[in-house]
Amino acid sequence: MKKHPLRRGGLIALLACLLFAPLVALAVDDPSEMLPDPAQEQRAEAIGAQLRCLVCQNESIEDSSADLARDLRHVVREHVAKGESNQQIMDWMVNRYGNFIRLKPPFTIGTLLLWVMPLLALCIGIGIAWWTFRRPRAPTPPPLSDEERRRLSDLTETR
View 1 (tube, rainbow, N blue to C red):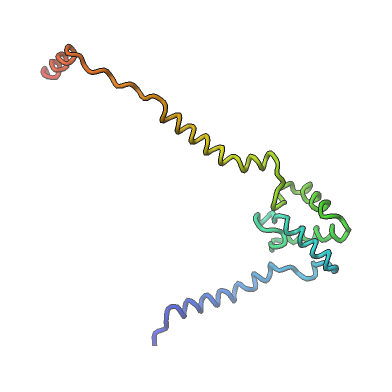
View 2 (cartoon, one colour):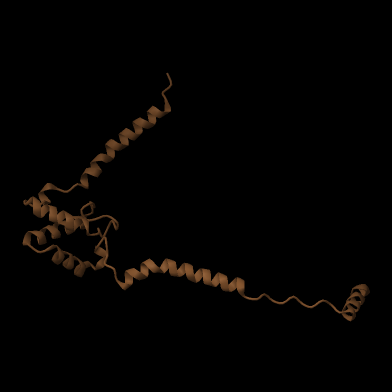
């Protein structure tokens, strides 16, 4: 009896899910890393959700399973346990890693340039295209005079 091709594909997908499910479970926090006070833990998670994983780039340190993210989560929890404010913890992280550590960087001249540069490049491109098409083209040469036509025909007939 011949097996249906979709059944085989479904079985392979199920096996792949079962094989990779433990890897997904590794991304979950280790309960021993969590703070004993639920309010402090929630504050630490909120702060960690605003910090970029420096390895994974667009993931917060709370979502990342990278070793550096785990270390940063530990640092955040240490600062929360010491009783520092959210702003003090964010300032400490920015002083140490720069504004890149923030998932939502503050509005500065640098970030303004990042947002405006594509529009500025588009305007410059449109300006160059407009200037190129508006520039007068080379004038067409005047028609040959009777004398020039006669001379041209003499030259072409002699060959």
